[in-house]
Length: 68
Image (cartoon, rainbow, N blue to C red; front, side):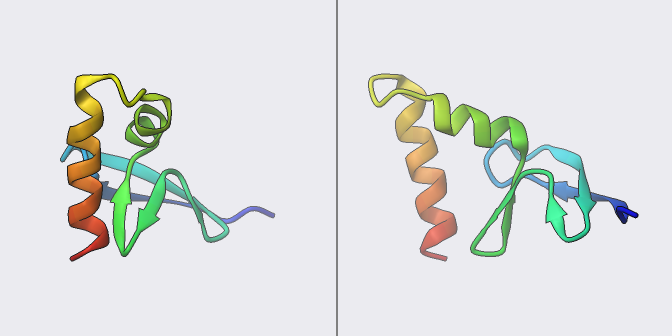
């Protein structure tokens, strides 16, 4: 049987509170250096081209998380 829990977390990229689902220790979204990134932002980061303006914003936000 799958153990499913719902937790509220704040995404470090969009600063939105999200309900994240925890399935047997697998979280909906990702945790980087102890910080939560929601599934939507994770998808946006992956799909953003280096030519897009928002690319640099994502890089800056991720640097803060990695080097905290």
